[in-house]
Image 1 (cartoon, rainbow, N blue to C red):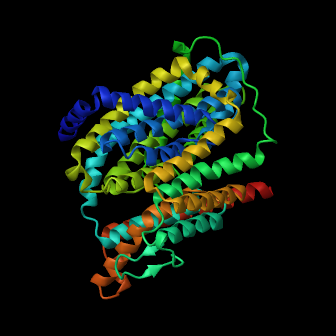
Image 2 (tube, rainbow, N blue to C red):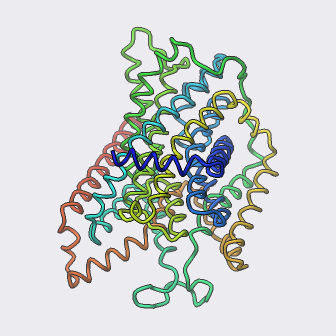
Image 3 (tube, one colour):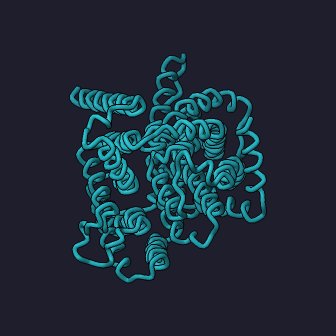
Length: 501
Protein backbone atom coordinates (compact mmCIF):
# COMPACT_ATOMS: atom_id res chain seq x y z
CA UNK A 1 0.00 0.00 0.00
CA UNK A 2 2.95 2.32 0.54
CA UNK A 3 3.73 2.01 -3.15
CA UNK A 4 0.21 3.09 -4.10
CA UNK A 5 0.34 6.04 -1.70
CA UNK A 6 3.70 7.11 -3.08
CA UNK A 7 2.42 6.71 -6.64
CA UNK A 8 -0.60 8.88 -5.83
CA UNK A 9 1.76 11.53 -4.49
CA UNK A 10 3.84 11.15 -7.64
CA UNK A 11 0.75 11.82 -9.76
CA UNK A 12 0.26 14.99 -7.74
CA UNK A 13 3.71 16.17 -8.88
CA UNK A 14 3.37 14.87 -12.44
CA UNK A 15 -0.10 16.25 -13.18
CA UNK A 16 0.89 19.88 -13.22
CA UNK A 17 0.61 22.03 -16.35
CA UNK A 18 4.39 22.29 -16.72
CA UNK A 19 5.13 18.59 -16.25
CA UNK A 20 2.21 17.55 -18.48
CA UNK A 21 3.71 19.78 -21.14
CA UNK A 22 7.07 18.04 -20.75
CA UNK A 23 5.40 14.64 -21.04
CA UNK A 24 3.80 15.75 -24.30
CA UNK A 25 7.10 17.19 -25.58
CA UNK A 26 8.97 13.99 -24.77
CA UNK A 27 6.34 11.78 -26.40
CA UNK A 28 6.26 13.93 -29.53
CA UNK A 29 10.04 14.00 -29.86
CA UNK A 30 10.39 10.28 -29.17
CA UNK A 31 7.74 9.32 -31.69
CA UNK A 32 9.12 11.67 -34.33
CA UNK A 33 12.66 10.38 -33.89
CA UNK A 34 11.48 6.77 -33.75
CA UNK A 35 9.73 7.15 -37.09
CA UNK A 36 12.96 8.20 -38.79
CA UNK A 37 15.03 5.10 -39.73
CA UNK A 38 18.45 4.91 -38.14
CA UNK A 39 17.63 7.33 -35.35
CA UNK A 40 15.90 6.17 -32.17
CA UNK A 41 15.32 6.92 -28.52
CA UNK A 42 19.00 6.54 -27.59
CA UNK A 43 20.05 9.23 -30.07
CA UNK A 44 17.18 11.51 -29.03
CA UNK A 45 18.11 11.27 -25.35
CA UNK A 46 21.78 11.86 -26.24
CA UNK A 47 20.89 15.03 -28.17
CA UNK A 48 18.60 16.26 -25.40
CA UNK A 49 21.09 15.54 -22.62
CA UNK A 50 23.10 18.77 -22.98
CA UNK A 51 19.96 20.81 -23.70
CA UNK A 52 17.99 19.89 -20.58
CA UNK A 53 20.47 21.05 -17.93
CA UNK A 54 18.46 24.26 -17.59
CA UNK A 55 15.45 22.19 -16.47
CA UNK A 56 14.89 20.90 -12.97
CA UNK A 57 15.69 17.16 -12.65
CA UNK A 58 12.06 16.01 -12.48
CA UNK A 59 11.11 17.81 -15.70
CA UNK A 60 14.25 16.60 -17.48
CA UNK A 61 13.68 12.94 -16.64
CA UNK A 62 10.00 13.17 -17.56
CA UNK A 63 11.15 14.34 -21.00
CA UNK A 64 13.66 11.49 -21.21
CA UNK A 65 11.03 8.92 -20.23
CA UNK A 66 8.62 10.26 -22.85
CA UNK A 67 11.35 10.00 -25.48
CA UNK A 68 12.19 6.45 -24.37
CA UNK A 69 8.60 5.23 -24.63
CA UNK A 70 7.82 7.30 -27.73
CA UNK A 71 10.86 5.97 -29.58
CA UNK A 72 9.59 2.39 -29.32
CA UNK A 73 6.11 3.50 -30.40
CA UNK A 74 7.48 5.30 -33.45
CA UNK A 75 9.95 2.62 -34.52
CA UNK A 76 7.19 0.31 -35.74
CA UNK A 77 5.34 2.93 -37.81
CA UNK A 78 7.79 2.97 -40.72
CA UNK A 79 8.36 -0.76 -40.33
CA UNK A 80 4.66 -1.40 -40.95
CA UNK A 81 4.03 1.21 -43.63
CA UNK A 82 7.38 1.21 -45.43
CA UNK A 83 9.06 -2.04 -44.35
CA UNK A 84 11.85 0.11 -42.91
CA UNK A 85 12.11 -0.47 -39.15
CA UNK A 86 13.53 2.44 -37.19
CA UNK A 87 15.51 0.20 -34.83
CA UNK A 88 16.41 -3.47 -34.38
CA UNK A 89 13.61 -3.85 -31.85
CA UNK A 90 11.05 -3.11 -34.60
CA UNK A 91 12.31 -5.67 -37.12
CA UNK A 92 10.13 -8.52 -35.85
CA UNK A 93 7.03 -6.32 -36.18
CA UNK A 94 7.66 -5.73 -39.87
CA UNK A 95 7.38 -9.41 -40.84
CA UNK A 96 3.60 -9.58 -40.51
CA UNK A 97 2.88 -5.87 -40.03
CA UNK A 98 4.04 -4.86 -43.49
CA UNK A 99 2.14 -7.76 -45.04
CA UNK A 100 -1.01 -6.45 -43.35
CA UNK A 101 -0.31 -3.00 -44.78
CA UNK A 102 0.22 -4.39 -48.29
CA UNK A 103 -3.11 -6.20 -47.96
CA UNK A 104 -4.87 -2.87 -47.33
CA UNK A 105 -4.95 -3.26 -43.53
CA UNK A 106 -2.41 -0.58 -42.66
CA UNK A 107 -4.72 1.26 -40.20
CA UNK A 108 -5.54 -1.98 -38.40
CA UNK A 109 -1.84 -2.87 -38.27
CA UNK A 110 -0.96 0.52 -36.80
CA UNK A 111 -3.78 0.19 -34.27
CA UNK A 112 -2.56 -3.31 -33.32
CA UNK A 113 0.95 -1.95 -32.76
CA UNK A 114 -0.26 1.07 -30.75
CA UNK A 115 -2.55 -0.97 -28.51
CA UNK A 116 0.10 -3.66 -28.01
CA UNK A 117 2.67 -1.04 -27.08
CA UNK A 118 0.17 0.55 -24.68
CA UNK A 119 -0.62 -2.77 -22.99
CA UNK A 120 3.03 -3.84 -22.69
CA UNK A 121 4.18 -0.44 -21.42
CA UNK A 122 1.32 -0.03 -18.95
CA UNK A 123 1.70 -3.52 -17.45
CA UNK A 124 5.45 -3.04 -17.07
CA UNK A 125 4.84 0.33 -15.41
CA UNK A 126 2.48 -1.31 -12.91
CA UNK A 127 5.07 -4.00 -12.22
CA UNK A 128 7.84 -1.48 -11.65
CA UNK A 129 5.75 0.52 -9.17
CA UNK A 130 5.77 -2.50 -6.86
CA UNK A 131 9.06 -4.04 -7.98
CA UNK A 132 11.38 -1.01 -7.85
CA UNK A 133 11.03 -0.26 -4.10
CA UNK A 134 11.56 -3.95 -3.31
CA UNK A 135 14.64 -4.00 -5.56
CA UNK A 136 15.92 -0.85 -3.85
CA UNK A 137 15.51 -2.44 -0.42
CA UNK A 138 17.21 -5.58 -1.66
CA UNK A 139 20.10 -3.67 -3.21
CA UNK A 140 20.77 -2.03 0.17
CA UNK A 141 22.52 -5.32 0.97
CA UNK A 142 25.03 -4.74 -1.84
CA UNK A 143 28.64 -4.11 -0.94
CA UNK A 144 31.69 -3.50 -3.18
CA UNK A 145 31.89 -7.19 -4.19
CA UNK A 146 28.21 -7.27 -5.17
CA UNK A 147 28.41 -4.04 -7.17
CA UNK A 148 31.47 -5.36 -9.00
CA UNK A 149 29.62 -8.60 -9.80
CA UNK A 150 26.64 -6.57 -11.05
CA UNK A 151 28.84 -4.43 -13.31
CA UNK A 152 30.70 -7.50 -14.59
CA UNK A 153 27.34 -9.15 -15.31
CA UNK A 154 26.26 -6.13 -17.36
CA UNK A 155 29.59 -6.02 -19.21
CA UNK A 156 29.78 -9.67 -20.23
CA UNK A 157 26.09 -10.25 -20.88
CA UNK A 158 25.72 -7.14 -23.04
CA UNK A 159 28.89 -7.62 -25.07
CA UNK A 160 28.30 -11.34 -25.69
CA UNK A 161 24.55 -11.38 -26.36
CA UNK A 162 23.90 -8.11 -28.19
CA UNK A 163 26.59 -8.49 -30.83
CA UNK A 164 26.57 -10.99 -33.66
CA UNK A 165 30.28 -11.42 -32.96
CA UNK A 166 31.47 -11.85 -29.37
CA UNK A 167 34.83 -10.37 -30.31
CA UNK A 168 33.18 -7.21 -31.67
CA UNK A 169 31.07 -6.89 -28.55
CA UNK A 170 34.10 -7.27 -26.29
CA UNK A 171 36.07 -4.81 -28.44
CA UNK A 172 33.32 -2.20 -27.99
CA UNK A 173 33.29 -2.89 -24.24
CA UNK A 174 37.06 -2.43 -23.98
CA UNK A 175 36.80 0.88 -25.86
CA UNK A 176 34.19 2.10 -23.40
CA UNK A 177 36.23 1.01 -20.40
CA UNK A 178 39.30 2.67 -21.88
CA UNK A 179 37.50 5.99 -22.35
CA UNK A 180 36.20 5.82 -18.76
CA UNK A 181 39.76 5.63 -17.37
CA UNK A 182 41.00 8.82 -19.06
CA UNK A 183 41.86 11.60 -16.60
CA UNK A 184 43.15 11.90 -13.04
CA UNK A 185 42.75 8.77 -10.91
CA UNK A 186 40.48 9.69 -8.00
CA UNK A 187 42.33 7.40 -5.56
CA UNK A 188 46.03 7.96 -6.33
CA UNK A 189 45.88 11.27 -8.17
CA UNK A 190 47.84 9.75 -11.04
CA UNK A 191 47.38 11.07 -14.56
CA UNK A 192 46.02 8.32 -16.83
CA UNK A 193 45.85 8.23 -20.63
CA UNK A 194 45.48 12.00 -20.95
CA UNK A 195 48.47 12.40 -23.31
CA UNK A 196 49.59 15.33 -21.20
CA UNK A 197 46.61 17.45 -22.30
CA UNK A 198 45.14 19.52 -19.45
CA UNK A 199 41.73 19.39 -21.16
CA UNK A 200 41.61 15.64 -20.47
CA UNK A 201 42.57 15.77 -16.79
CA UNK A 202 38.88 15.74 -15.79
CA UNK A 203 38.17 12.84 -18.15
CA UNK A 204 35.98 12.62 -21.23
CA UNK A 205 32.45 13.87 -20.74
CA UNK A 206 29.73 11.25 -21.13
CA UNK A 207 27.70 13.92 -22.96
CA UNK A 208 30.38 14.27 -25.61
CA UNK A 209 30.73 10.51 -26.04
CA UNK A 210 27.01 9.75 -26.30
CA UNK A 211 26.30 12.58 -28.73
CA UNK A 212 29.33 11.68 -30.84
CA UNK A 213 28.79 7.91 -30.93
CA UNK A 214 25.03 7.87 -31.38
CA UNK A 215 24.20 11.06 -33.26
CA UNK A 216 27.28 12.30 -35.15
CA UNK A 217 28.40 8.76 -35.98
CA UNK A 218 24.98 8.09 -37.53
CA UNK A 219 25.23 11.34 -39.52
CA UNK A 220 28.58 10.25 -40.99
CA UNK A 221 27.21 6.78 -41.71
CA UNK A 222 24.17 8.13 -43.56
CA UNK A 223 26.30 10.68 -45.43
CA UNK A 224 28.54 7.89 -46.71
CA UNK A 225 25.55 6.02 -48.16
CA UNK A 226 23.06 8.74 -48.98
CA UNK A 227 23.56 8.62 -52.76
CA UNK A 228 22.96 4.87 -52.81
CA UNK A 229 19.81 4.88 -50.68
CA UNK A 230 16.35 5.63 -51.88
CA UNK A 231 13.27 6.16 -49.78
CA UNK A 232 11.09 3.07 -49.79
CA UNK A 233 7.65 3.33 -51.25
CA UNK A 234 4.82 3.38 -48.75
CA UNK A 235 1.43 1.75 -48.69
CA UNK A 236 -2.03 3.18 -48.46
CA UNK A 237 -3.09 3.83 -44.91
CA UNK A 238 -6.62 5.15 -45.16
CA UNK A 239 -9.44 3.52 -43.26
CA UNK A 240 -10.49 2.88 -39.66
CA UNK A 241 -7.68 3.33 -37.12
CA UNK A 242 -9.28 0.84 -34.71
CA UNK A 243 -9.88 -2.90 -34.47
CA UNK A 244 -13.06 -4.90 -34.74
CA UNK A 245 -14.13 -7.25 -31.94
CA UNK A 246 -12.92 -10.25 -33.92
CA UNK A 247 -9.52 -8.65 -34.43
CA UNK A 248 -9.25 -7.79 -30.73
CA UNK A 249 -10.09 -11.40 -29.80
CA UNK A 250 -7.43 -12.59 -32.24
CA UNK A 251 -4.75 -10.22 -30.98
CA UNK A 252 -5.49 -10.34 -27.22
CA UNK A 253 -3.69 -13.65 -26.46
CA UNK A 254 -0.63 -12.47 -28.38
CA UNK A 255 -0.59 -9.17 -26.48
CA UNK A 256 -0.69 -11.09 -23.20
CA UNK A 257 2.04 -13.56 -24.21
CA UNK A 258 4.25 -10.82 -25.61
CA UNK A 259 3.95 -8.78 -22.42
CA UNK A 260 4.84 -11.80 -20.28
CA UNK A 261 7.89 -12.51 -22.46
CA UNK A 262 9.11 -8.91 -22.43
CA UNK A 263 8.84 -8.18 -18.69
CA UNK A 264 11.86 -10.21 -17.48
CA UNK A 265 14.12 -8.79 -20.20
CA UNK A 266 13.78 -5.34 -18.67
CA UNK A 267 16.10 -6.36 -15.83
CA UNK A 268 18.47 -8.59 -17.82
CA UNK A 269 21.21 -6.71 -19.73
CA UNK A 270 20.84 -8.37 -23.12
CA UNK A 271 20.24 -5.29 -25.24
CA UNK A 272 16.83 -4.07 -24.11
CA UNK A 273 13.89 -4.74 -26.41
CA UNK A 274 15.78 -6.46 -29.25
CA UNK A 275 15.82 -10.04 -27.96
CA UNK A 276 12.25 -10.38 -26.53
CA UNK A 277 10.62 -9.10 -29.73
CA UNK A 278 12.14 -11.93 -31.77
CA UNK A 279 11.32 -14.48 -29.05
CA UNK A 280 7.68 -13.31 -28.95
CA UNK A 281 7.42 -13.48 -32.74
CA UNK A 282 8.90 -16.99 -32.79
CA UNK A 283 6.50 -18.19 -30.09
CA UNK A 284 3.50 -16.96 -32.07
CA UNK A 285 4.87 -18.48 -35.28
CA UNK A 286 5.25 -21.87 -33.62
CA UNK A 287 1.74 -21.68 -32.17
CA UNK A 288 0.37 -20.70 -35.56
CA UNK A 289 1.80 -23.85 -37.14
CA UNK A 290 -0.54 -25.92 -34.96
CA UNK A 291 -3.63 -24.22 -36.36
CA UNK A 292 -5.75 -25.93 -38.99
CA UNK A 293 -5.16 -22.92 -41.24
CA UNK A 294 -1.83 -21.19 -40.44
CA UNK A 295 -1.90 -17.45 -41.10
CA UNK A 296 1.74 -16.44 -40.75
CA UNK A 297 3.17 -15.19 -44.01
CA UNK A 298 -0.12 -13.60 -45.07
CA UNK A 299 -0.35 -10.77 -42.52
CA UNK A 300 -1.14 -12.50 -39.22
CA UNK A 301 -2.25 -10.00 -36.61
CA UNK A 302 -0.71 -12.08 -33.81
CA UNK A 303 2.69 -11.85 -35.48
CA UNK A 304 2.51 -8.08 -35.02
CA UNK A 305 0.74 -7.91 -31.65
CA UNK A 306 3.22 -10.07 -29.71
CA UNK A 307 6.50 -8.29 -30.68
CA UNK A 308 4.99 -4.85 -30.03
CA UNK A 309 3.80 -5.83 -26.56
CA UNK A 310 7.09 -7.58 -25.78
CA UNK A 311 9.25 -4.65 -26.86
CA UNK A 312 7.36 -2.10 -24.80
CA UNK A 313 7.06 -4.40 -21.78
CA UNK A 314 10.82 -4.06 -21.32
CA UNK A 315 10.70 -0.28 -20.92
CA UNK A 316 9.08 -0.04 -17.50
CA UNK A 317 11.05 -2.86 -15.91
CA UNK A 318 14.29 -1.56 -17.40
CA UNK A 319 13.60 1.79 -15.74
CA UNK A 320 12.97 -0.09 -12.50
CA UNK A 321 16.36 -1.80 -12.80
CA UNK A 322 17.96 1.57 -13.51
CA UNK A 323 16.31 3.38 -10.59
CA UNK A 324 16.68 0.62 -7.98
CA UNK A 325 19.96 -1.03 -8.95
CA UNK A 326 21.70 1.55 -11.14
CA UNK A 327 21.84 -1.15 -13.83
CA UNK A 328 21.41 0.03 -17.43
CA UNK A 329 20.17 -2.75 -19.71
CA UNK A 330 20.27 -0.78 -22.99
CA UNK A 331 22.03 2.16 -24.60
CA UNK A 332 19.15 4.50 -23.74
CA UNK A 333 19.20 3.43 -20.10
CA UNK A 334 22.97 3.95 -20.00
CA UNK A 335 22.55 7.52 -21.19
CA UNK A 336 19.82 8.13 -18.61
CA UNK A 337 22.17 6.81 -15.91
CA UNK A 338 24.73 9.35 -17.09
CA UNK A 339 22.03 12.03 -16.91
CA UNK A 340 21.31 11.14 -13.27
CA UNK A 341 24.99 11.58 -12.49
CA UNK A 342 25.08 14.93 -14.28
CA UNK A 343 22.40 16.08 -11.83
CA UNK A 344 24.38 14.73 -8.88
CA UNK A 345 22.09 11.73 -8.36
CA UNK A 346 23.13 8.07 -8.14
CA UNK A 347 20.42 5.51 -8.98
CA UNK A 348 20.36 2.69 -6.46
CA UNK A 349 19.04 1.91 -3.00
CA UNK A 350 19.46 5.48 -1.69
CA UNK A 351 17.71 7.23 -4.59
CA UNK A 352 14.24 6.39 -3.25
CA UNK A 353 15.18 8.01 0.08
CA UNK A 354 17.13 10.99 -1.20
CA UNK A 355 14.90 12.00 -4.13
CA UNK A 356 11.47 10.40 -3.58
CA UNK A 357 9.59 13.24 -5.26
CA UNK A 358 11.60 12.80 -8.47
CA UNK A 359 11.33 9.00 -8.49
CA UNK A 360 7.58 8.76 -7.94
CA UNK A 361 6.77 11.66 -10.26
CA UNK A 362 8.84 9.89 -12.91
CA UNK A 363 7.01 6.60 -12.34
CA UNK A 364 3.65 8.38 -12.51
CA UNK A 365 4.67 10.03 -15.76
CA UNK A 366 5.05 6.56 -17.32
CA UNK A 367 1.29 6.03 -17.14
CA UNK A 368 0.58 9.50 -18.48
CA UNK A 369 3.03 8.93 -21.33
CA UNK A 370 1.29 5.68 -22.28
CA UNK A 371 -2.06 7.46 -22.62
CA UNK A 372 -0.54 10.36 -24.55
CA UNK A 373 1.23 7.99 -26.96
CA UNK A 374 -1.94 5.97 -27.53
CA UNK A 375 -3.78 9.15 -28.46
CA UNK A 376 -0.93 10.29 -30.70
CA UNK A 377 -0.47 6.99 -32.50
CA UNK A 378 -3.95 5.60 -33.09
CA UNK A 379 -5.27 8.40 -35.34
CA UNK A 380 -2.04 10.16 -36.34
CA UNK A 381 0.41 7.34 -37.12
CA UNK A 382 0.13 7.81 -40.91
CA UNK A 383 1.04 11.47 -40.44
CA UNK A 384 4.21 10.52 -38.59
CA UNK A 385 5.32 8.55 -41.63
CA UNK A 386 5.34 11.78 -43.63
CA UNK A 387 8.45 12.83 -41.69
CA UNK A 388 10.29 10.54 -44.08
CA UNK A 389 9.61 13.10 -46.81
CA UNK A 390 12.13 15.50 -45.23
CA UNK A 391 15.19 15.53 -47.52
CA UNK A 392 17.91 13.56 -45.78
CA UNK A 393 20.71 16.09 -46.41
CA UNK A 394 18.73 18.78 -44.56
CA UNK A 395 17.66 16.43 -41.77
CA UNK A 396 21.12 15.09 -40.95
CA UNK A 397 22.82 18.45 -41.43
CA UNK A 398 20.49 19.82 -38.77
CA UNK A 399 21.34 16.92 -36.45
CA UNK A 400 25.06 17.64 -36.90
CA UNK A 401 24.52 21.30 -35.96
CA UNK A 402 22.59 20.33 -32.84
CA UNK A 403 25.38 17.93 -31.88
CA UNK A 404 27.96 20.71 -31.96
CA UNK A 405 25.73 23.28 -30.25
CA UNK A 406 24.76 20.87 -27.47
CA UNK A 407 28.33 19.83 -26.65
CA UNK A 408 29.68 23.39 -26.82
CA UNK A 409 26.85 24.65 -24.59
CA UNK A 410 27.83 22.23 -21.81
CA UNK A 411 31.54 23.03 -21.72
CA UNK A 412 32.19 26.21 -23.77
CA UNK A 413 35.43 24.52 -24.88
CA UNK A 414 36.54 24.31 -28.50
CA UNK A 415 38.60 21.23 -27.56
CA UNK A 416 35.38 19.30 -26.90
CA UNK A 417 34.28 20.01 -30.48
CA UNK A 418 37.42 18.35 -31.81
CA UNK A 419 36.83 15.50 -29.37
CA UNK A 420 33.25 15.27 -30.65
CA UNK A 421 34.53 14.99 -34.22
CA UNK A 422 37.09 12.32 -33.36
CA UNK A 423 34.69 10.15 -31.38
CA UNK A 424 32.04 10.68 -34.06
CA UNK A 425 34.43 9.21 -36.62
CA UNK A 426 34.96 6.28 -34.23
CA UNK A 427 31.19 5.78 -34.13
CA UNK A 428 31.09 5.82 -37.93
CA UNK A 429 33.80 3.15 -38.15
CA UNK A 430 31.98 1.00 -35.60
CA UNK A 431 28.79 1.15 -37.67
CA UNK A 432 30.67 0.46 -40.88
CA UNK A 433 32.22 -2.72 -39.44
CA UNK A 434 29.19 -3.93 -37.47
CA UNK A 435 30.58 -3.22 -33.99
CA UNK A 436 27.69 -2.68 -31.49
CA UNK A 437 27.42 0.65 -29.70
CA UNK A 438 25.63 -0.41 -26.50
CA UNK A 439 28.64 -2.23 -24.92
CA UNK A 440 30.79 0.89 -25.39
CA UNK A 441 28.26 3.13 -23.65
CA UNK A 442 27.61 0.67 -20.83
CA UNK A 443 31.35 0.13 -20.39
CA UNK A 444 31.94 3.86 -20.08
CA UNK A 445 29.04 4.48 -17.70
CA UNK A 446 29.63 1.48 -15.42
CA UNK A 447 33.41 1.42 -15.74
CA UNK A 448 34.07 3.80 -12.81
CA UNK A 449 31.63 1.85 -10.61
CA UNK A 450 33.34 -1.46 -11.43
CA UNK A 451 36.81 -0.01 -10.81
CA UNK A 452 35.96 1.65 -7.50
CA UNK A 453 34.04 -1.41 -6.25
CA UNK A 454 36.92 -3.74 -7.14
CA UNK A 455 39.43 -1.51 -5.36
CA UNK A 456 37.30 -1.21 -2.23
CA UNK A 457 36.70 -4.96 -2.08
CA UNK A 458 40.40 -5.79 -2.46
CA UNK A 459 41.47 -3.12 0.04
CA UNK A 460 39.03 -4.44 2.64
CA UNK A 461 40.44 -7.97 2.24
CA UNK A 462 44.15 -7.04 1.97
CA UNK A 463 44.21 -8.15 -1.67
CA UNK A 464 42.45 -11.48 -1.22
CA UNK A 465 40.44 -12.00 -4.42
CA UNK A 466 38.22 -14.55 -2.68
CA UNK A 467 36.27 -11.64 -1.24
CA UNK A 468 34.67 -11.23 -4.67
CA UNK A 469 32.95 -14.60 -4.21
CA UNK A 470 32.24 -14.37 -0.50
CA UNK A 471 28.61 -13.21 -0.53
CA UNK A 472 25.53 -15.13 -1.72
CA UNK A 473 24.34 -12.22 -3.87
CA UNK A 474 27.62 -12.07 -5.78
CA UNK A 475 27.60 -15.84 -6.25
CA UNK A 476 24.01 -15.71 -7.53
CA UNK A 477 24.95 -13.02 -10.04
CA UNK A 478 27.84 -15.10 -11.33
CA UNK A 479 25.56 -18.14 -11.66
CA UNK A 480 22.99 -16.12 -13.64
CA UNK A 481 25.81 -14.78 -15.80
CA UNK A 482 26.97 -18.34 -16.50
CA UNK A 483 23.40 -19.28 -17.51
CA UNK A 484 23.14 -16.28 -19.85
CA UNK A 485 26.49 -17.11 -21.45
CA UNK A 486 25.51 -20.77 -21.80
CA UNK A 487 22.24 -19.84 -23.47
CA UNK A 488 24.08 -17.49 -25.82
CA UNK A 489 26.63 -20.18 -26.78
CA UNK A 490 23.95 -22.82 -27.36
CA UNK A 491 21.85 -20.49 -29.53
CA UNK A 492 24.88 -19.54 -31.63
CA UNK A 493 25.84 -23.18 -32.11
CA UNK A 494 22.31 -24.02 -33.19
CA UNK A 495 22.29 -21.18 -35.71
CA UNK A 496 25.55 -22.39 -37.22
CA UNK A 497 24.28 -25.95 -37.41
CA UNK A 498 21.18 -24.78 -39.26
CA UNK A 499 23.32 -22.84 -41.73
CA UNK A 500 25.46 -25.90 -42.37
CA UNK A 501 22.37 -28.01 -42.98
